[in-house]
Length: 212
Image (cartoon, rainbow, N blue to C red; front, side, top):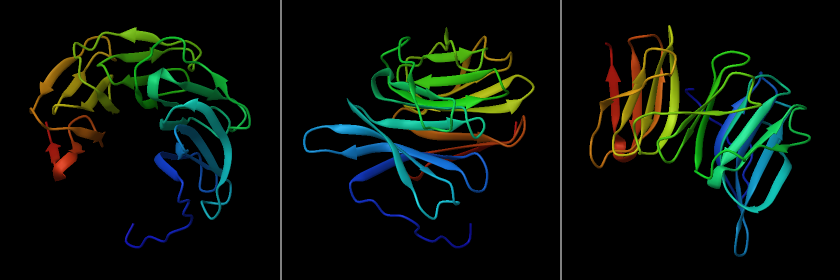
């Protein structure tokens, strides 16, 4: 990460999430700025990011906020107003799955082939046990936006969110508790490298670190 090179610039496109399945194949999502509306955008590269192809433009007024592929074929994109799509062929075809919430969707993570997590803009967390075919609501105890979720091992999870909210679960996501709240703070991202060491970052240059 010492040196970075610009590979593609699209002036009418705004990207918010990128995911690579391997060194060559990756997807980026966001939206295209139209005359009066925004259209969800999915782009794909098969040559390590040297070139990108628009593979899907959603005609609905939406913004895709996150993309997650668990392998080269199976993946999801999600965004505003509960809009969620699933692909099983690398993004050539997409199936709408937004029938379980109308909230903004911010993050998708899978801990294994079948078990995955979805965070929203109203404190709701959804969990799947069958590879994303069905999503069940998990009570988080918070009404704040949950922007990201991180798996720390041994059934332990952490989330980052609005108003400086950090939640944790130590029983596989069944029960959640609030361990940090800073009014005015917004933690957009959280990442744990093991069960004890983790980082959170957000607006106005805020960084947090924990070792316990």
